Each structure stands twice: as C-alpha cells, then as structure tokens.
Length: 189
Image (cartoon, rainbow, N blue to C red; front, side, top):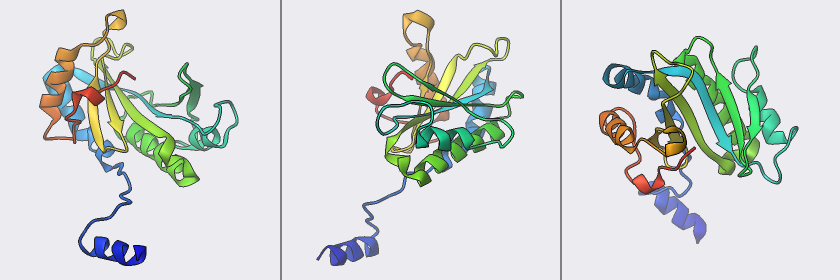
C-alpha cells in the first residue's frame, strides 16, 4: 500500500523526501551587489558551516575530518566548537573572493551530507563588512539549508542586534534570494 501511495504522490508532484537545495547559497553572488551598492557592505571572504556532530564533538570525528578536507585542496578549513556543542567549519579567502568562498561552503555542505550528516547541518553563514573596516563584520547572511532561506544577522557588539539594518536588508534582498519570512526564526549565530 505504501508503494502505491508513494507512486501516486510522485505522479501528483507530492514528494515527501525533498532534498534541501544549496542553489540559493550560490545566488548570494547577486545579493552581494545589492549589499555593496545599497549598504556599503562587501564580502569579507569568511564563511562558516555549522553542524552538530553525532555524539560529542572533538578532534578526529568523521564529520570533522570530512569537513576539514572539503573546499580548496591547498588550504584546510579551521574547525572549532562552541559552548552549545556545535561544530563550526570556518572557510576563508584572503582576497575576499565570494565566488570561491561560496563554492567552498557548498562543498563542505555537500560532503557532510553525502557522508550521512545532512540531518545535523544547522546553517551556513557569509560575512559582510563596511569597506573601510573589513576586519569587523557588520552583517552575516545566514542560510538555513532545511528551509532553503536566508536571513540577515547584524550583531551590535554586546548591545544585541541591529534589527533596523536586518529588516532593511531583508527588504532589499527579497527579490534576489529566498528570505525567511518568519522573523521568529532569525536566530543569532
């Protein structure tokens, strides 16, 4: 009976196991032009992939080995852990090349998913900063793979977040990349 329902569902265009797409992540190239012209923000060349490894995180877990080897074959990714038990894979490009950085981030996501860690992937971020101070990111574009949407996160030091900037960025990028409509899902990273 399940096979018949699955066949019927696929014929009607209803597929339960929709694989989350990384294509919107690559669309961030177009959004970068809007962020530069409208907000004076440029990519810093830094991005992260955050996941929760099965079991306790630590050097040498299979997921960390997979993530560390992804991307550029010359440069290895930096892997750290936070106080919430998350593993963060940091990728970077010295010249701020967003295209290469996005390719590296997609590669990390793909390799982790193919190794069986897709369910543990939390989010991918790309940092942007003001042109006069590229060392201090002002905005992170956060991509939630399972939802296929972005949201802006603008930290304001110890004072919280710059919600006004986040809302302006969402408004400016709505037609460029899929933006998360539910602001309640915009979590700090």
